[in-house]
Image: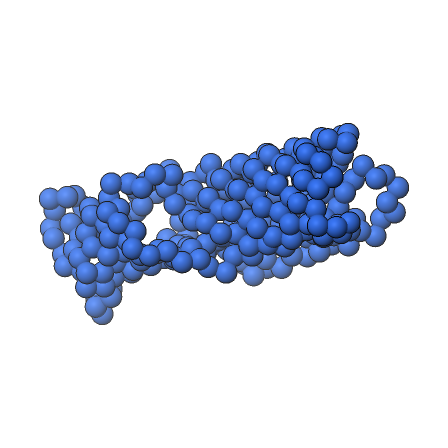
Length: 250
């Protein structure tokens, strides 16, 4: 099902690009561009919870962005922009945690599922794939520089949030509950991810020549990636990513 959704989204983007690029450019108020870049950042809380005692490592995933943007020029300075893109967001982290509420499966052959307060080492891998529609205002500082600000709506068509817990113990159900030693356990919350993400965009583009440009956008999610009733992670996590890439004017 996810594979079919992915193919439909790619087909929709490609069809839109070819349809619009094949139209006669009788109205120069519209500017059409293909964009290609990478998302660098984290899916994380906006402040580090007390349960996370230290972040020991962070590494990026392969997180490209590919899409199509169109801008309608209101005048020489101002415009309105939108489009559609495929956005991959993700990262990996290792952390030392204390009394963080979670749900894990012990990897000792028993496959026992436990839920409670974990103390020890945590490793998490996040891989998210979205179809994104932005809507933003543009402002041309001069012929080379353009600023943009607005928002975006994204639909999740593929998601992974999983990892391991190790070198510690879990207090089942409550901080004073039964203590179970954990050598290594795993967790998988893929099917708990929220289907939609909404957020803000703030960025700029630098024109290189008549066709090419470079751009950078800060994408700040306002919607937690998990529903509010999901307890296995007891704090909100947001997509906060910087996109850097190239534009090509059609």
